[in-house]
Amino acid sequence: MQHAVRPRTLPRPATLPAPRPRTPRVRSLIDADALRVLHRAARVLLDDLPQLTDRLVAVLQEQEPAYRAAVQDDAGAVWQEVHRSLRHSICSLLDPRGARDGARRCSWKIGAARAEQGLPLDALLHAFRLGGSLVWQGLLEETSRTAPEDVRLLVHVASDVWDFVDEHCTLVADAYRQTERQLAWRRENRVRLLAAALLDGTSRIADLPEAARALGLPEDGRYVVVAVDGGGLAGGPGARAVLAPGVRVHWHTGVDADYGIVLTGDGEEAAVPQEQTPGARVGVSGPVEGLAAVGAARRLADTALSLSPESGGTVRLAEHLPAALVVSSPELGTALADRLLGPLAHLEPADAEVLLDTLATWLACDGSAQRASRRLYCHRNTVLNRLRRYEQLSGRSLSRPCDLVEVSLALTARTLLRR
Image (cartoon, rainbow, N blue to C red; front, side):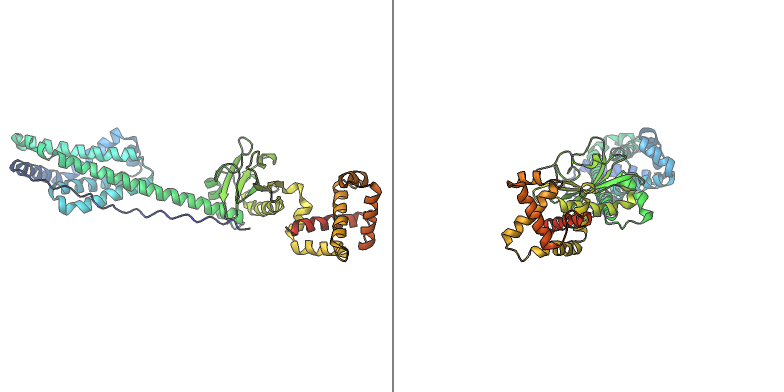
């Protein structure tokens, strides 16, 4: 039975979206004067960029705990990131067309990098808005210092400054979310691969600690594997079986069957589903010790699943070991059935079926001819006569334990292997 990981579509790689087209506006003479004032102040800010960077880093440390921790971890990297972002922002004020693509790439890379590092998105957006506020404040301060009468002209370019900030906040958020989706896919895919390797029995010893962390299960523990046919149990993936409260289980979706790796502790009853949809087929392995043995448990669960009736039901391997032996070696099972039941082949099919049905019913009634006769709606002596007839045809004695075991296994093989 295959239990490979179902293919998942790889998320599209993070790509820088095309810039939104801007509606050109006609500049008035006042706008032209405002641009001259803006450029003059921006050039001063660009010359004083290291000091401006120091100010923004200090503000971030004061107002954003996430950046406070980032500065403690790598102050130089944070300073360089802020410096690059401010430089691109100010250059975009001086040359919007020439600097726009570089500024967008810079913001996109910052958004993606911070997503990989786990910095909260809210903190990142706040940092960009603080940077915009600091640049705007610097423009006002510089103009007030050198030409106070021109401060009023900056009002005419304020929308340009804040449009830039809004655009780059959107860029950063898009980059962050795309990267976050990719990281989530990679984590989920890694978990699927680790779980598949455990169930295959191909996990490397070196990978077991990672698998334990990824699946949220201890490396050393007592486990049972639950195999569920493609029909599934109540709910979707991860909710195919309603197990006992508090049971820790990791569900893995396969091609023909789904598997639950269940931490059982001291009791195996917890691994038996308490609820399932009608027609669902479930097989429960015996217990194994440690994640390294989950592959063996999966094979046992597959065997138990193969014993589950087509109409549905749960089969615990521990309660069906003779049948499990038969289906585990169908060639030997077939050979045993031929040897023990083959002598009936020369009979009429209906006659042979009566003898086989009587044998199976007598065994199911623990060797009681009286109880078997009630189930078969015939006299007790009829049951005994049929049993003696089988003994005569097969040369076996149902009173001999060794022969009785072989007959029981042969009947089981006949039932299971002709499905």
